[in-house]
Image 1 (tube, rainbow, N blue to C red):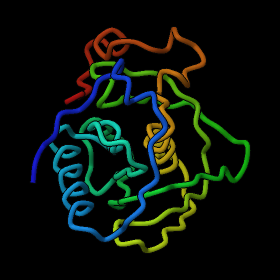
Image 2 (image 1 turned 90 degrees about the vertical axis):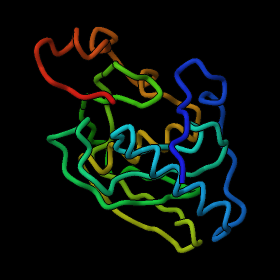
Image 3 (image 1 turned 60 degrees about the vertical axis):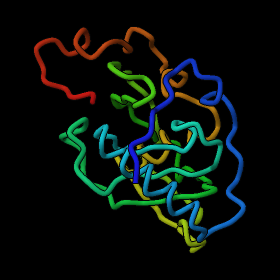
Image 4 (image 1 turned 120 degrees about the vertical axis):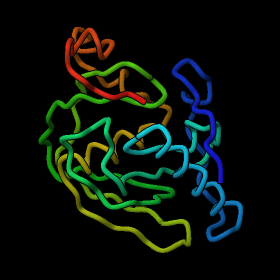
Length: 177
C-alpha cells in the first residue's frame, strides 16, 4: 500500500462537502482504506478523512493504535466509517486541545459534544451504529467535520487558544508528526 500526501489548510478541496460513497466492498475502496491507514499511521494521526488526501468521498478512518500525538487519550477501536451521520445525545460539550494533519504544528481548544451516536457503514457495506463519549466522540466529530468542509480552527471560540504547539506548550514534548 502507500503513504499518500496530505492536503494542508488552504487547499480548496478541504472546504468542500464530500460525495457519498455509492459502492461498497470494491477493490478500489479496499485499496483506498489501506492507503489511508498507512498514511494515518505514518503521521501518527488519530484519524484521517478521504478529503485530506484529495479524495472527495464520505469516508473516514480512526483509532486502532495509541497515537503519540495524543498520549493521554484512551485507545479507540480501528473504524472505517462511510456516509456517517452524527446525533448528539445531549447538549453537554467540553473543550479539548485538537490538532490536525492538515494543520500541522498547531493546536486549538475546540468545543465538542461529549456523547453522541454515530451511524454509517463500513467498507463492506455493513451497518455501524455506536454510542460513544469523550475522546472517541471528539475524534469522530473532528473527522466527520472534514466531510462537511470544516477544519477544527473554524470551531474555535477563542482564537487566543489557537497557535503553534511550541508557543502554546513551551518546554513540553508534544509530537506533531
